[in-house]
Length: 100
Length: 158
Image 1: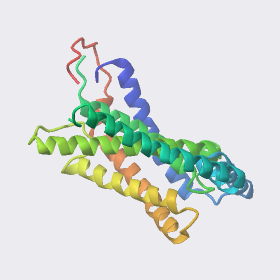
Image 2: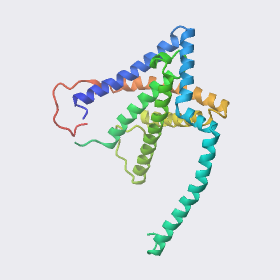
Image 3: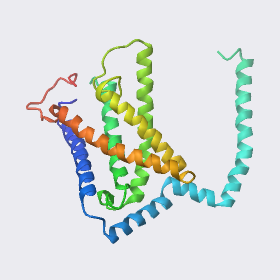
Image 4: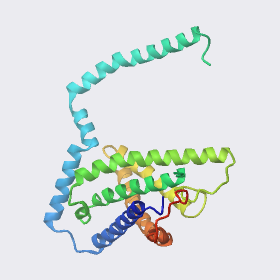
């Protein structure tokens, strides 16, 4: 596998990506202070991340009282159903001759 | 084709860590945003999804090592990402620290700012250390970058 040209190309790509990251850290750390536009772009990106990411999704769930009530109501039905199902499953297995 | 488990895990882990490092660096601050053109939303999403894969790969690796230990299998896994000495041990420790601090950041972001700030500090500084160590790792294993002079037909040679 290591001798295959496509795999060699992949190794080169992976190695180059780490050199890019190391260079990126050095450039960012040693470079000039970020401009106001860059700070604003970063803040805007962070706000977008808050809304679009999984955390934003959970936050929107937290804020939506109707959806929360719906989830709690459905959970109150499904959770007993799940446990009843497990109980019946165990009962059926026991009646057919043990769990083993 | 005979491909070893440790070989597959090594390269899956490489891809996962590369994606995590790149998406994570873009989120460090305004100085670093240019790495992904300030698309923090995508970086955040990729970071969280790949973090799950990273935890899964680590869990599988730890389970594999436990099974090997129970079976008294002392055969050296040269490609494996975790181990009891050298760079494998370094990777194991840093991976656990990444996972623990990452989980603290994810869980405590809205509730405990002090814990989040501390975990973010460790998570960020450890990223720089591990990226530096990876450059050293690539340097030490630079022979893997040599292009084959002629096509080798024996697939068993990893």
